Length: 209
Image (cartoon, rainbow, N blue to C red; front, side, top):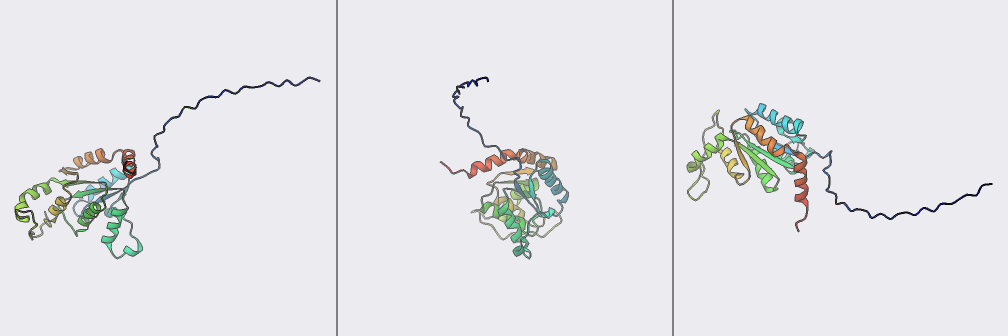
């Protein structure tokens, strides 16, 4: 009968290398971006904007024109309240100022985004900047107080309140545009890298040292 030979194995202790891992961006994370604008006369432009943000760059696009604003049961009879709740729920806010004021809900959304200090970007049709300079003496006193100045509604401009919208967000980034190509370029530059925006949002949530 053969004897069993036991062989002792000496385990080598290997020092583990400590590697600092950079938190990876969750691949399934999808930011919710609210596109706020008037709709009349801008339907095709908004369709393109929604497609670029949603289909090309992967955002969850919230836009009233698309019917993607969630309406809770308590807001069924209050369109404005539902839209303001959407502002609260979104991660990013993208405001567009066309030469139409509409019902004023878009303006209210702008002000709500400001109040909530949302990460926000704005673009404005070049006509708005022209109107702002042209109408400033009629709209404001020398001390900067808003006068009760309005104009008759026309097919080109329904209210000078579009200028008020512009003035209310001037301190933020407001990019002038005159064509959809310029809008597409702005969207690609600001929202083309969603992972980068996710990282920035995570950094903003970190407590300041």
